[in-house]
Image 1 (tube, rainbow, N blue to C red):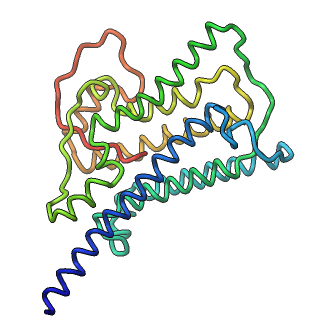
Image 2: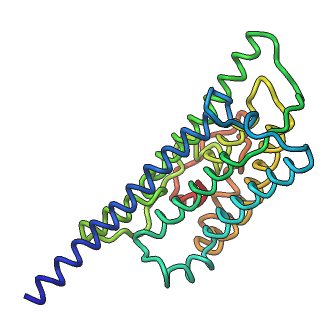
Image 3: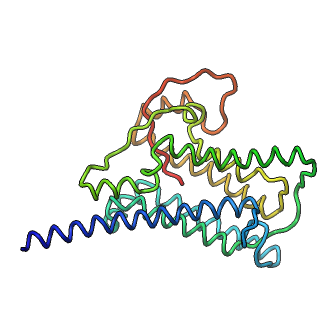
Length: 267
C-alpha cells in the first residue's frame, strides 16, 4: 500500500512537471507573437511606438530599466554558475522551463510598461523599399524560429526534459550538427533577432533605443555564452569558432563540415 502511494505521488509529480513545462512553453509562444506585433507596430494594443507618454528623460530611464531587467534575468539565469546554485531549488527537469517562464514574464513586463519616444529617425517612403524592409523583418523572425528547430526546439524551451521525466527516460545532452544556418553563422537565432529589430520602414527614437540596446545585449550575451561553451566543450567549440563566423556570414565562403555543436542558451 505504501509502495503504491509512493508510485502514485511520483507519477503525479512527473505529470505536474510536464504540465508546468507546457504552460511555460505556451506562455513563450504567446510572448513571441506579442514580440512580433510589438516590434513591428502591427496593430497590437501596445507597441514600441505606442503606450503611455512620459517626458523624454523619464521615458528613456524607464525603457532602459526595463531592458536592463530583462538582460540581467536572461543572462544571469543562463550562466552555469547560477544553474549550479539554482539546482538546489528547482529540479533539473524543469530548470529550463523555469528559465523560459521568467524570460517570457520579463519581456511581457517590458511590453506593458514601455514608454514611446516618438521622434522619427528615418521614414522610408518608397513603396518598393518599404516592401523590402518588411521582407527583411519577416526573414529575421523566420530565421530565429527556424534556427531553434535546427538544433532541438523543444529542448531549448524545456519541453523535452519534462517529457523525458514523465517517460522515465534520461534527458541527457542533445547532440547537434552545424547544418545549414549553423554552418553559416554560429548564432543564427540572434542574427534573426537583430534583423527583426532593425528592419522597420519608420524608425522612431524609441524603436532605435530598443534596437540599439537589444543588439548591444546580444553581442555581450554571445561573448558570455561562448566563454561558457569553450569551458564546457574545449577544443571542439574552439574549432567551430575558427571555422564559422559569429553573426555575419562570409560571402563566398566554402561549406563547413558537419560537427557536433552545443545548444544556444539564449531565447
